[in-house]
Length: 100
Image (cartoon, rainbow, N blue to C red; front, side, top):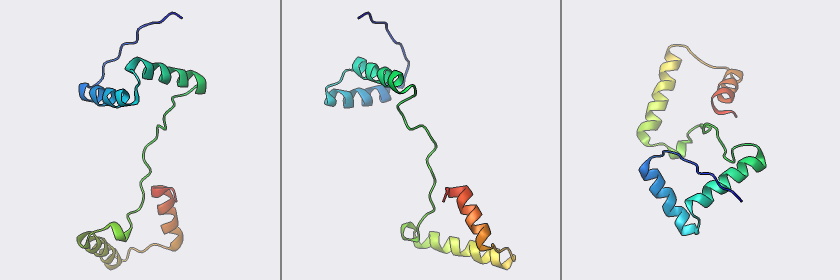
């Protein structure tokens, strides 16, 4: 089998961290690149889940007292400005912002 070199410039710290993990797995950087290329050919795609993380609404259990107070204040201010939402509008906002 003939081989060809692949050159890439990457962040030094990233390279060191990745090679440390590969070493613990008993895999050389060349083998890891070979595996990556093999998966690209096999799947006809990048073998990675490339997408932006889905944001999720914060649950009240994950909020501090100050954060809860701030959210309640926003709600009160909205009511005082007579800006309210129907259940359908709330559903549409949640669907758009959080895909739920």
